[in-house]
Length: 297
Length: 291
Image (cartoon, rainbow over the protein chains, first blue to last red):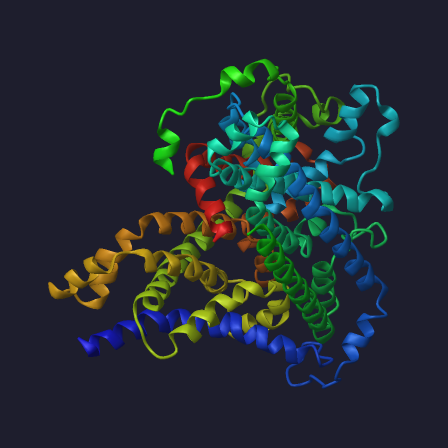
């Protein structure tokens, strides 16, 4: 039996481990070394340049645009999505059951089922200045003055992209928060009503503290989404990344630098910078999460 | 807890009723978001049945008569059918391989004690916390050197490698909660280790396998970054790649109806499958997030 045990373990673990080592571990490990070279893709011609790539990143205005846009998305997207989703989830689970609540959940979840490419192509049409759903809708109700070239104006393009990210994410978090609200004992709401708490007080004093853990999960996931943004920007925006860097994101800079310009060392340095940015944020999020759970406990 | 909630509690409705007027705000808010969510999707579906003239001149009106030929044009002339087929092969292969390898690793690490068990577990799971962008450039050259660039096996292996860590993470917790007695009884009856796994433990883990399977299917079906870099041959484009390419090329040719038809063909099967299994899918996906 002992012999069979080791043979089984080897058969169960070895194939996955080989795949993992070749396609996951080795690329990640190589990335840290490549980011310190000026490699352009020719085998054996990677010259070690130390931290030069990172110094150049600090002066690369397009990369700085990308960092700024990802930072803006990091501030706006999670907050807007969580507020909207919490609002809808608490409406869906008021003190009385709302008729059609499950039908609403089905519809809200639709965007979660679609690939980001489909969403990007679709919203590219919606934003089309002449024939798009948005502008023609505005014209139909007489608001011609509000029509814009949503993706062509530098001051609007990033907002338009973020609106799509929020549109595509809200439904998932409505369902997540709904499940959390459902698990709160009904007696707590009833007690609150007896104590004379209004709708707003119930939300603030009972619902919010008891779904805090789900909200934290939501912030972490949405933070990851906000640091990416590649697919929407690459498929939907002019340039892509335009107009004039207004919607550039780090992933797009990296992709273009590597696979259009062939500057593989420099592109990898962007990846390493992105990794450390994400790591810093994760550490902060963990600290903040631990403190706030201690407070509620 | 459940016993408490099912017991007929004296509801304070009589006390609260006078203060609770019917409030239209929740209904209006929920209806508004439902419209915002569904309208672009409905618009795409109706536009896919219109002529280009109708799309350009009357964006909000339904078609005078449905033009199904847009769909067949998108399927054949715009190669949506081929992209669909490519996606099916790559995602089907990767999903099967991911579930097999992921469940074996999760089971071995969850139910067997040996030196290095923890280290192996963290080696797999840690990969979930690194951005794929970091690995992108070296990964391209690894795949190129293996001669797998732009091939089905190449995509299937890479998809699998990147889907296994979450699968292991999810199923590891699942296998830990399964009762050990059943497995021990099977061993006493003379089952081999592999037989215990495939005949006893895997069927017991079905709910977990379904949840993580749905999660993986959607993640792999919607993958865009990996094929964009690793799959440059237009004949082997997966659906997401094909649609993105189509939106550029059809835009030049102003074949809007064909593009809307392609979009609808890509969108509808997923939405129909979702409506059919919506409860499982929502439960599976949100369970994946909370874990």
